[in-house]
Length: 127
Image (tube, rainbow, N blue to C red):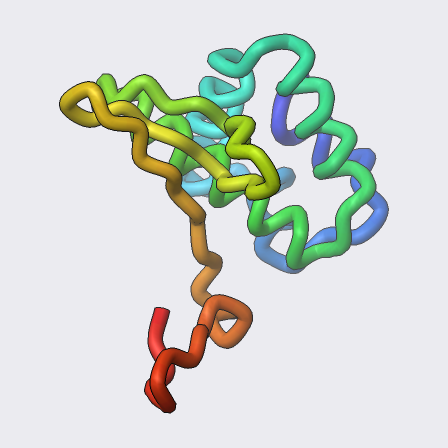
């Protein structure tokens, strides 16, 4: 299962996802290879679930999942022992990583949707 074949069957794609799936430009080719490696490093069950999510999501959802896959693979290459979408009780973080025997929950933010991540605390907004 490759990211290009998954995206080819997705109903709704952003312009960026179309470029990623079809472009022969070096950045697209290298990003596809990186995302493919991330998929290969997930369990088969998780990879299949992510493939279905990519095929059934809207453009923004597809972009978000691809960013999560890239973050997962970066953490894996840094030997942080990431878990993709770990079980965290009622929460569903994008990743968890292991640092000095501590589990750190991580969420990946897509830059064109930052307002969805803002919180208000004592009348101040922030991430």
